[in-house]
Amino acid sequence: MNADRAALTLAEKVLAILELGKKSATYKYALFTAILDLCIEKTSATGVPPTTLTTPELAENVIELYWPHALPYPDKGVLQQGGGKDEQAEIVGAIERFRLKRASASEDLLHRARVGHQRAWQQLARFVEWKLIEMPIPRLQVSGTGEDRFLYEYGWAQGITQGVVGAYQRGVPGEFDNRLLLRPGVAEGLLRLNGILRPVLRREWAVKVASMNGLPESRLEEFLFGASRIPLGEVRGPLAELQGGRCFYCEDALRGPTDVDHFIPWARYPDNGLDNLVVAHARCNNRKRDFLAAAEHVERWAARNAERANDIAQAAVDFTWERDAARSRSVAVATYSRLDEGAKVWIEGATLVGLEKTRVERALAGWG
Image (cartoon, rainbow, N blue to C red):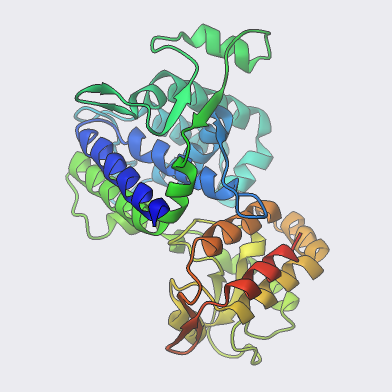
């Protein structure tokens, strides 16, 4: 109960600082979402959340978040996300320029662009890291009464120069510390709040972008954050082969319309890694929706990923598709471990059953 109360107090503070950012660029939404994602990604195999994040990690995640935003919106072009009228956020502008110069249609997926243009990608990542160090990291915890470091501590002063950061990025010995030290209980609170905060963040972010660009809000959230923009059909074949040509959920032969589904739902964490993808009948996928799957599905999913790890790795190489098995497992552990015993999860059709937490924990522990 104390942990739940602490999480609610944390949520109130987070929503307050996001509200204060309504007249600024969208960096606060991006930075906070990146912090939330890293707390999930870096959860240990036993469910322990991280105590430290680094600025390079945050930069990578912020690029991932803004990557789809740097494509033209229909009849509008790349949407403005800066603090003033017709002003573009520098990070979004840098990603847009990278995409225009180096990301061909076949490299539209972020992973392919990163693999295909490693040097340019490193330059982009360093620029984004510098912008985060310069502005949003020191400003995220500022309210009307000053700075309240309730989320994290950091070791540099506001006004730090790009020269100092650039020297650190080149490996020049110095005293710059790239760590964010999470305050006690913050990572745990964020894991508990993920299902609440993530949709709020996406909604508020979309509202902000709609306001900046004079657009209706109805389709904007899907454009900015929707899973449907990723061409998952490319990997349908190898995934179906891994499953022996059977629907992952009902285990009947794959016939008729099929979907590539995110086993841990996209709404809870955006993981397009191959380990998190399964092929299912469209009817099964539509019924599962954004529910978490029951223990028997988790057992089969974890066993597939453990037993067919080499095949999944080869498919990732063949299709130049992202894959981080450790991250996908951490996301699953972080998600399921915060559920109460008996929480409702999906098993088939319109049927929800109580979570058998011990079975889930045992299955995930066997995937290592």
